[in-house]
Each structure stands twice: as C-alpha cells, then as structure tokens.
Image (tube, rainbow, N blue to C red; front, top):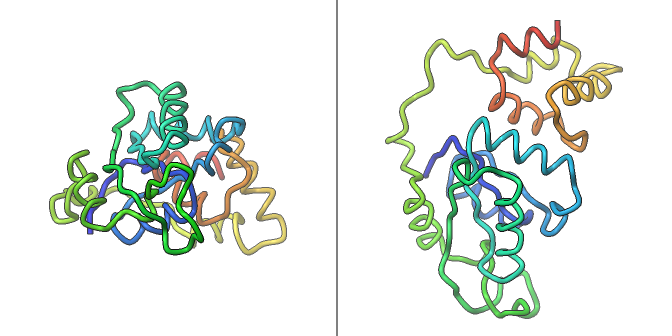
Length: 195
C-alpha cells in the first residue's frame, strides 16, 4: 500500500472509496461542483494545503478539470501536486451508461494505473516513509471522550466550538474531526483549546 502525508482531493464518494484501498492517506471529497459554493470546504482546502499540501486527483473529463482549476484558484500552486490518470474509455460497473464524455472516472481506473499515477506524483510505498517522531503524541478518541467531545450530552456543541476555533466546517463527524485536527495541530495545541 502507498502512503502520503498530503491530503488527497477527489470528486466524490466512490473515488474516495477506491483510493482508500490503494493509499494510506487522508482523502477529502469536493462533492463534485459542490466545492464551488461551499465556503467552509474551500477554507478547509486552504488550511489543509498550508499544513500538509494537497494531491489533486480529479476525473479526466471537462468537469474534473474544471474542479481541479477551481482548487488551483483557491490554493497557492506550491501547495498542490497534481495527479493525472490517462483517459480511458468505458463505464464504471455501478453505472448504467458511460459518462457524457465516455471516460472512466477515478473510481473506474484500474489499480495499477492509479498506483503508477500516484508514484509519478511522489507518493511512495509505506516502507519508504520515515516513521513519525516517537515524541509526537496523537489526539485519540479516548481524548475526545475524556474531554467531553464524544459520548456526552453536550459533545456535539463542544465539537462545534472546537471546529469553530480551528476554522473547520460544521458538517464533520467526530471521526473526521479527529483525523483532520491530528493533521493540523499538535497535542499541546489541542490541550490549550479544550482546557
């Protein structure tokens, strides 16, 4: 399995599911053209790009390129690594007919082609990635529970307050929030926000 610390940006749910089987990484969906109007998602993209960098992997059709270019307008070029797959024609298994342009989207591209495209963009095998520093304390689900961010009567309100303090969108699950804040802030910064 490949591994990257960068956040991979894809268009939709099925693209994210597909990549989760190939690469160990945080994967963020644009929800197609939804990113054009979703100010919170745009701000999240900017924040993650600044902290981790983005790998943008959209479909090769005109819609995918439009979304890719929109992201390029939101985020400085040096914080983006583009991942491109070749145009392959056909239809995804779950669909009744091919897309408008007849091209396969990310979800329909064979594994070997996706892996090659990711490698060309600098994503490596997990063995090549140095382990995280042993002194880097991750924020855990247990921390969330102990700090009242999950499992309690006011957990949702407390999570929303934390999300607001970090400039994150409110439409996030507890698991998503945990993954994102571990990318954005240290354990000590987290403690300062919740204490």
